[in-house]
Amino acid sequence: MRMLVTLIVLAALFGLVMWQYNTQLKVLEKHQKQKQTQVASQESEQEHQCSEGAFARYRMLGLESNRTAKYKGHFNAGLGHCYTLIETADTSLDTLWKRITLFDGDGKVFGTFGWHSQPGRKNADIPPFNCDVQMPTGEHRTCSTETEFRFFADAYMK
Figure 1 (cartoon, one colour):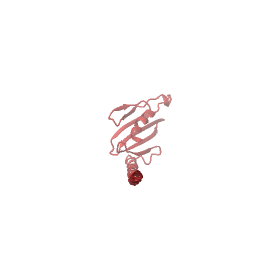
Figure 2: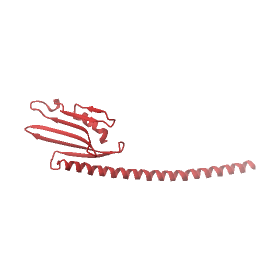
Figure 3: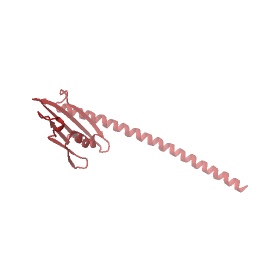
Figure 4: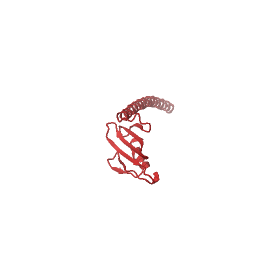
């Protein structure tokens, strides 16, 4: 009989511990979801502010009327900063000029790409006249193609 009473008491205590564990787990899960929602909302607001800042820089540079100019703003949560990529392409005297600049939210330049066509040469055979990016580590990378520039710039824009 004592054994039966002991087993019943142990089962009741186990049930109580499990109930308390499940209750605390639900509270923690609810708190986790609230925190995730708060972080997502904050990142969304930072992304929105970053896009607005990118457009403001685009306008400040007088590129709004340039049909070939593009801009993209991105808040990099890992780096905790806003970055803007501005691209222009212009033609002058049968020469195509292409420029891409990577800025942070304060206007500091982190990367530049410059290229122009040359009469009588295939575009794919013409290297850029300027192609470099300062990486988040502080290291400067020189590039030899637009694809390489975009790869380096993605450290900020992804």
